Length: 387
Image (cartoon, rainbow, N blue to C red; front, side, top):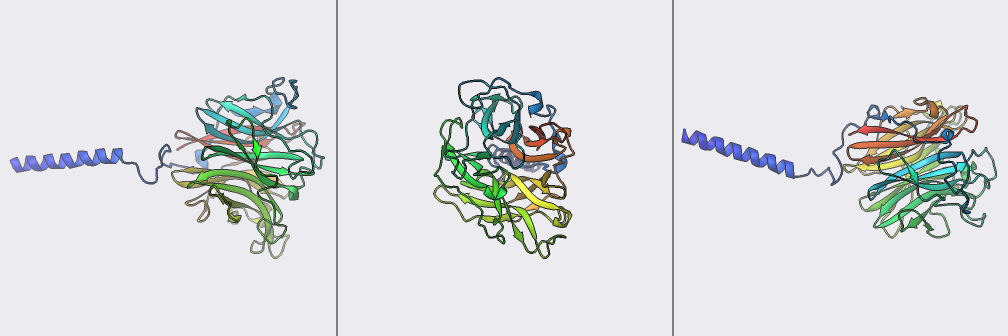
């Protein structure tokens, strides 16, 4: 009897020790401050109850912004686009492209000018502009590589400095071959920026058989393994992709990557092409664009827009893929997260995803616009996934 009691006490002690040990020991794949990865399937994302957060049709903040930085408040109808949201301290910060009205195709890019604005929020839903003037604009003179316009920014906090990556161009905003990528730094939480160098960081090679030979743009960055992983959109010729109109091979839009270790950048490399069983080029799926990375539990997750050129180039879906190292072995979902038909205000295009981890909620911001609106005014909405 005494031996049995001693054996039971020993079992209880070992069980209690294992319970306490497991409760106090964090799994290796669960970095501090991040929840373990749960369901991240497309069905996980549910449209936010608040709907559109930025909406030009609502004439939001009219008479508040000084869009020309001349000391006078302006009346405007902003076309919001390409929001990038991040957590800084106890606030969420949104850097977003906007212009007064809507730029027509082929317009000389002088008026209206696309500018970058900075908004703040305590909950990621209600936003307040700070400052009231643009925080980043095209450079001068107009002959500079980014002297006509800047847009599609992505910001990361790397070793105590904020890095902003952006697309710039010199000439008509819809001449995609002019797009180049540069970056700037900030020491005041993104309220002012200083360009790094006078030349772009990335430019197209000009060799059509290169994955980045024809077009590059849409930069998006994340810090991973103490490096900046800068993803970007690239267009080039892919001989192994069948296309009904291009035989053999196709012009395809893919995702490239360059990495920064604090002193130098790696040679740009192709890391992700569309799964042809989901988005076949022969059915006019042009490829992936506006990449947006986030690291969860040590895994790289990448959200992209998917473009179709059957009736003019349009971004019609948002899609998700993941990789253990951010470069290889990508697992692409078999279906889209959302399509442009998912919401009335995105019935022409849905684009520019921006994922942010809020505790155990993964919030996905995204942009879009509505056909039939007189200005096709752009807006920003969101959806949540509970991990």
